[in-house]
Amino acid sequence: MRYAAIDIGSNAVRLLIADIIENDGSVSFKKNTLIRVPLRLGDDAFLNQHISDKKAADLVKTMHAFHNLMDVYKVTEYMACATSAMREAKNGAEVVKKIKEETNVDLTIVHGQVEAKIIYASHAEQNIDRTKNYLYIDVGGGSTELSLFSAGELIASKSFNIGTIRILDNQDTEESWNTMRDFIREHTRHFKGVFGIGTGGNINKLYKLSEEKNNAPLTFVKLKSLYDYLDSFSLKDRINVLGLNQDRADVIIPACEIYLSVMKWAGIKSIYVPSVGMVDGIIQTLIDENRVKTALK
Image 1 (cartoon, rainbow, N blue to C red):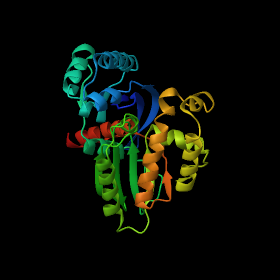
Image 2: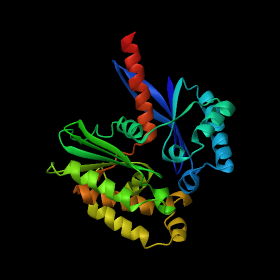
Image 3: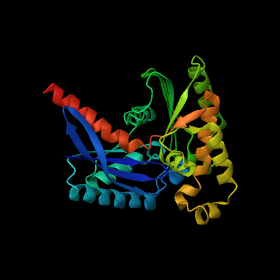
Image 4: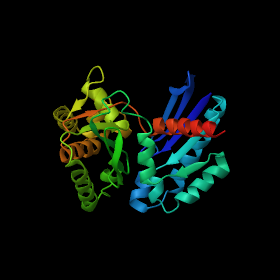
């Protein structure tokens, strides 16, 4: 049995095809195929609040390709979610309808709170001490999702209009930054120690660049040093000298700035990077939903 997850983000569109494994009553998944297409819908959405005809056409082509791949891989169930860029585009619903008509892919535009819930469903915390306090930090192209957990219980969760593409397009506001800072300080001040859990493509890449071993957390000091190192290169040299992909070389700098700001405000000294993201959460959400359906039969 195979499930698929489609994540239509502000920077890239992803398809994860996963093999579902059932063993003694437990259900898990193994990643089979992951495809990433850097469409950058956020450039349209955050500047013009509209997905251009060109971007919409590229998205339709991508969804058509994803639909064909799911067919070839014999995917039995899928979920497709669009986040910040499609939320802000005034023609988002129109694009969703066009995708359904031309590719037969059912796409849902999810709100920030739902996005945060899906990201949490990835169970990024499963290999760490659940008795401690953790702040989930997921940085995307258009938004940052924060979820605070203490002893495994959700304390607070919120989505903020601060993201890498939004910053590059100068569409982030001082008010949004202040709101995020106040949220973090209000909800973490009661806890003596808070650890970070970072998800998303940029923190995964930063972790690889840090060369940390054995799933060790990335310290604030190490992340700040890495940021200073990357920022010392021009965009061109981050691509040609450091070997970063073109669509990663620019967003990785504002991503660092967001993670460092959140960690500073929350007093986080180290952040775990389990290398999961929205697509992992979507697959786990499908598994959880089907478990409930089976139990009700």
